[in-house]
Length: 225
Image (cartoon, rainbow, N blue to C red; front, side, top):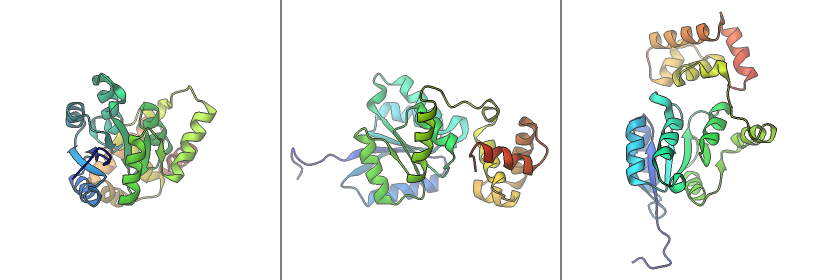
């Protein structure tokens, strides 16, 4: 029986375009049902925005790289539609640990950013802290944010060259720069090799580069790898 001193469970909403990953997170959080409950989930930006605005969960877990703008688009659109933008807290849960992804989402209003290697218990603690208004980051990522805000606290993170690329092209760029073969990238991103080739060609064309060596140097200079 619950009483006035019984902590209420936090309502969490999952946003990720991979249904299997959402199912995995839901199962992991079910082991901590005394602290959190999954209020809903969505695999697309429009559906996520619609449901989050309607349900107003305590915390929304956002994947960064999704079609139609990814987690940042969800965050920005929800905040525009809510009478009180702080009614929902946002925590990024992403495979990406790239500096521009972390900083961009934090500047957009997320309260934290953790990677998908996090344990279920650590994720619950992160959710609780974000719901309380704290900022939460995986250890390696905190340095990105501190460096960015300490050096240019009022400046938005804008890179005109990088902004030309779609989210998927950025993912391909990052993996190319890390030395992945097209076949490995296709497997990593669940797309065909031909699609990888198309994205790689678009990246080289947009950045006006001719080979992977130039691309790797460019990415390393921006700490994208």
